Length: 584
Image (tube, rainbow, N blue to C red):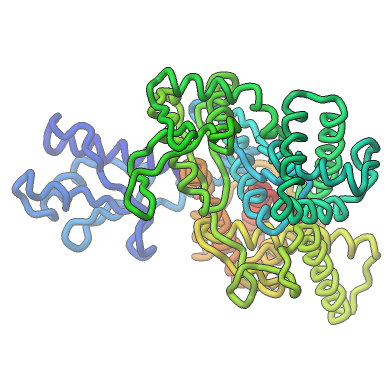
């Protein structure tokens, strides 16, 4: 109810001026949602903050404000409570009018952002020649949800996949494959991704223990950087093979990304170092070129440098990140750049943001945001791994979730003595399994670690995707049972009489507020909390209010409430990247 809150805020500001004079123009009325519904819907706390300035008791100040306050179109007569709180309760007629308005709106009353901005969301970012694992789950899912919300708000969003496709590891892998499997360097898909990963591990072991092989690998890097035809061809084949495997997972998760790997910025790295040198920020330290940072020290308490060119002349992640940042500001013309990575990289982002700031590369109208997230833990509370101690492959995790959902559905159908086609069962299992994984992740505050449990995330009760999908399917069950086409209900007048109808109505009208807050603070769990609470309020309404058996005009009014709930759930879940089902 952002619009409602804005209207009330304006009226309160005008009342302040009318009561105490023009000096009080611009004073914040401190309008917040009421902590307890029995006191109303909103509460203005400004009277308490003005007591010292005006030399009056807060209740007297509140009385003077209320005397000049005109909110009769929106609220019942204001009430003063406690030491001077101004309580405001929305009129039922106002709520009904608001619902009738959003009923005809595809955006359900959520206005687009006042100004559209170019925003970049950098997320997922797997490494070539490695499989996506559970560590990529959170970046991929959180980044996609943030991008969806920003797109819905009307921003021009560039979804970037900053893949690791350059550097020493490629020299190492190509050198090893030249010896043991040269066909992989000349023929597309000569290896499957699992074998490629296995060869990568063996190449790494060899690189760590064999100095002669280290030198061979470094020469391959030099050849790659120089554009040697055979090495470049081999590199492209390895990248394409990994890309195909990543795409399988992105399609499973319904994720869209524009790939722009580390290699894209390779021609820009020397320019980064040159410009830092010109700005006087570079210091040579043990042969490496560095920028010393404020607020970062080593164990000895000495200032910590950010290395941008190694002593051997090579570049590193920081150099690439600085080059990518400049490109995104100068070429992509981004106004907000959002990096979705694990919390462990927080220092890295703080460091290269500081260097870019010192170099004068960040205009005043550009915002850089690191969106950190915690770890995925197993049920033992430790880092989520397979029984053998390996990192869990993301493909296996998703397949397992669908398999669990399939088994759960089969059990439920047997209990209900329902017959469904295999096609129906497979589709429901796919949607429920993938949705459960996504929602379990997004419903946590992203800064926290969370425990991954198939049983909890697939539970039909509690704050889970299946619970909300079930509520959505329940509403469509009402339409099937009553042979109702929600689209044909037209612009019917909503009548709010029962307390559960009022509670549901007020909550339906809070969607704009929630989406606006997620757009700003980039915490998708707030949208999850809203959808869960909405589902609970609908179930309370469903349990206490007859719908199909109600007399007109109450019957149609309640069907409109059902339709608005279903549409709100569908929209909210879509912004989390979750598909809905009309039958489960």
